[in-house]
Each structure stands twice: as structure tokens, then as C-alpha cells.
Amino acid sequence: MNKNQGSIRFTDASVVYPNGTVGMKDLNLEIRPGEFVVIVGSSGAGKSTLLRAINGLNRMTSGTVEVDGTKVPQKDGRELRVLRKRVGMIFQDFRLVKRLTVMSNVLIGRLAHVPGWRAMFNLWPAHDREVAMKALERVGITEKAWVKAAQLSGGQQQRVGIARALAQEPAIILADEPVASLDPVTTHQIMKDLVRINRELGITTLVNLHFLDLAKQYGQRIIGLRFGELVYDGSAANVTDEDFRDIYGRDFTEDDVLDEDAVGG
Amino acid sequence: MNVAPPRPARNWPLLLGTLGFLVGMTWWSGHGIGFSLTELLCNLPGGQRLLQESWPPDFAFLPRLYAPFMETIYIAIIGTVVGGILAIPIAVLAARNLTLGPIVWFADRNFMNILRTLPDLFWAMMFATAVGFGPVAGALALSVFTIAVISKLWSESLEAIDMGMPEAVRAAGGTWLQMIQFGAIPQGLQHYVSYALYAFELNVRASMVLGLVGAGGIGMILETQRANFEYERVTMIILAVLVAVLVIEQISESIRKRLA
Image (cartoon, rainbow over all chains, first blue to last red; front, side, top):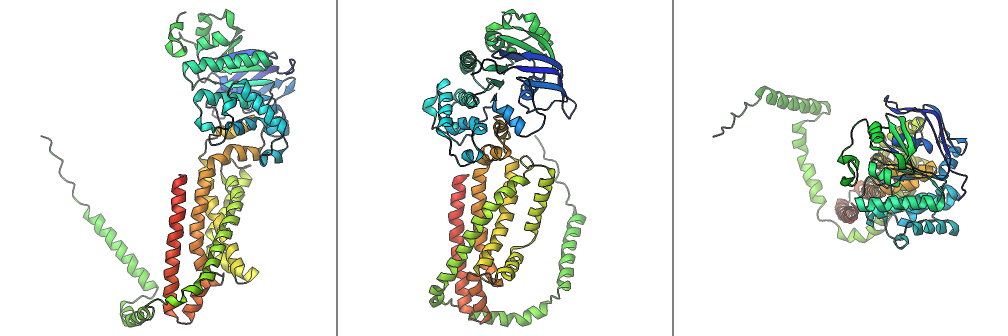
């Protein structure tokens, strides 16, 4: 993967939802190619808004987002699809077609790479099948390729979600609360997978998390949001309890950490 | 001990008022269509004669029903398949969460309403005039009828799907069509098959009636025998149709249950 790809730049970016909620306020932020960034903040702080602005799922009210120097188009169309092709997304609820096989789900990541008629009639080129299979290999579930997605455990389903994103051969991966529906053991496995993929392939990775200890453990750089505003931006190594207090606007509790002994630690 | 509160008194004025209103409405409507009890009683012997002439059913006539009966089934199959395929885009564009835009949605919704408002007999007569009396007219009429049934039911179940999957297809750079094919339709597939089978049941029944206006099939035989006062054959036809419809509905229903 090209090491010079996957930079993101927000310039005076704001998002106000039709109901008046502020999702993002005058954000200026630069993310360099290959970074592993964890975004924290309480619910409603604008974590999802930030991620979804990068692939145009949410539109800006003002300001701009650029990916590798190109503005993210603010309307549906070819240009936006060309951008999305290079940005993989991983969701909290996995978003797999449960009645289809794992392979079919991963091939959805190849939709933007093949002629429309081939995808329509399920005539995937050998190369694309290979890319999909390699993506499954990278998350270690090749043996499940022909199993229906519905038969997998939560952790396995999220691995398929990651494989689908990898099949896009993306420059950027956006993970929106990827571990929020998983148990603690699986959570650590998935987080480790994301870090490993980021290191191996140099894909710029942005992960939304609400567990503070996870953010500190796996983040390289931490971005804190509060009411849509950037309130913290620094390396994970230096982040303090005080900083987290600023981000959340309150003392943190057992609910904010995955492993309870991390409180006050 | 707990004592139940006394039973509230019945609202007699409301009950009597409602009853009076219903009786009044019925009398008024009967008057409107020229219904008279004396006339009905005078004509009862005629009805009795008809029943006597209709019994026993003419079983010798049964073999001659085979060909027109199969024609009826063919009409129903063609109508279900053609209408079922055409209903797919119409249903998708009528689903608020999937449609291409408010104008397309509005136009499609109204088109569906027009199809549904006009009865299948009307379509049969229209097509009989256009392409001539016979099974082709029947198949065309049932195609339209099937579009109306499936698109209405299915567009509503498509509106209830989880939009997460379609969004994931979009996020991966998929087109609108790919979002529909890979994100939406897999979720609505079970309902679609169920509605298509239901439409087939309706079509078998409807294609019998359509024959009355010259759209081929068993209805056409029924109409000729009735016009010739062959009432024992008419009874035979009705019995055969009854059995066939029951069997087909049983099969279709058991498939649909297994899908659910």
C-alpha cells in the first residue's frame, strides 16, 4: 500500500443537523498517512459525525474535509463513489448480509472495483476473489469463507466486517465503535487486529471508542471531542486522567472503562 | 374482602340508537335497489327449480374440463411471473427509504394507486379489446393485477428493513443499484417470495372469473354452459374449481409458512 496515501484534513469544518444539534464545530485537524488515531468523547460528542464526514455519509454545513488533498464531495455521484472506494468502514453492528456467505459479504468491498454488470450477475473476476480471500486470511477466518454470516459469533462477524473493509484495498479505515457490541476478550482481539493491520499495511486508521482504558492502550494519537469541538489532541502515551476529565466534563467511572481495575490507575 | 365495584349500567340510548341506525340504513338501501320481500317469496320456486336442475353434477363432463382448467393455471403462472418481475422496481421506488427522489416516489406511488383502483375485470376487458378474446388477454390482465398486489405489500415491508446494510454498501463506494441489490433486497427476499405465492393464489381464483368476460380458461366454459342452461355441468365446474383452488392454496400456504 502506498505510504503517501491516507491523509485527512478538516478545515473550519462544522456540521449542524436539521434538528439543530451541533455535530461538529469549527474543526481544524490534520491526520497524517498511516496514523492510528483513537477518538474519544461521551455519546453525542460528535465521534460518529467526524468519521462519517470523511466518507461523505454526513454532509458538512460549512468548511471542508479533504482526503489526500481532494475535497470530499458533498453530493452523491461518481466523485463521491471514487473517494469511498479508498475508504473502508467498520460498524458497531457489523452490517453483514446475514443470509449470504462470508465470501459474498467480503466481495461487497470489491463492488466499486469491478464493472457493474459483473457484480450484478455474481461474475467476480478471479483477481477480486483473490483479494477478498487475502482479506479473510489477514483476519484469520479463511475457513469460514463459505459459511453463512448468520452462523458466526460476534467477534467473527466483526472480523468479516474488517475483511470487507480490507477488500477495498483502502488508504483509510474508519471504525465506528467497532467493539461496542463485543465481550471483553473479543474486544481485545479485534483491537489488536486493527493495530496489526495498521502496522502491516500502513492504512490510516481512525477508531471511535468510548472505553478510556482501550483508548490509552491501543491509541497512538488520541483525539478528544466534546459537544462537537476538539478538546484534546495528543499522543496516547502522555494522556492523563485530568485530560479525560476535561473531555468528558466529569470524573470517570466504572462505566467508562472495560477492565474495572483501570479506574484511578 | 375486596368487593368488585358495581357493574356499570348499560348505555341503552347508545345501543338502541345504533341498532335503529343500522335497521334504518338497511331498509333505506333495500328500498333504493327495489328489494321487496313479497317478490322474493314469489320467485322462490324458480330458485328451487334451478337447484333441482343443478343436481347431480355431470361427472361425464369432467374430462372436458382438463384443457380449459390447465389454461387457467397457465394464465395464473404467466401473470404471476411477469407481474412479479415488473413489481420489483415499482416496489423499490415506492419505498420511501430506497426511492430515487421525491418526484419519482410520488409518480410511482400514484401509478400503483391507479393500478390498484381499477379492478382485474376492467383490465381483462381492456386487454380483450386490445389483443382479442382469449388467454393472452387474461395473462396480461393478471400481470397488471399481480404488479398491483405485490408492489403495494412489498414496498411496505421494504420500508421496514434495517438501513445499516444499505449504508454499508454505500460506504464501500457502491452505486444506488448495488445498494438495492446487495443491501436492501436480501432483507426483503423472504417477504417477496411469500407475496408472490399469495399473488399466485389470488391469480388462480381471479383467472376463473376473468373467463366470464372472455379472457380464456375455465371461466369461459362456465359462461358457455350457463348460457346453454346446462346447470348440471355448471355444478361440476364449480365443484372442480373449488377443489382445485383449495388444493393450490394449501400447497402455497404450506410453502409460505415454511418461509416465515
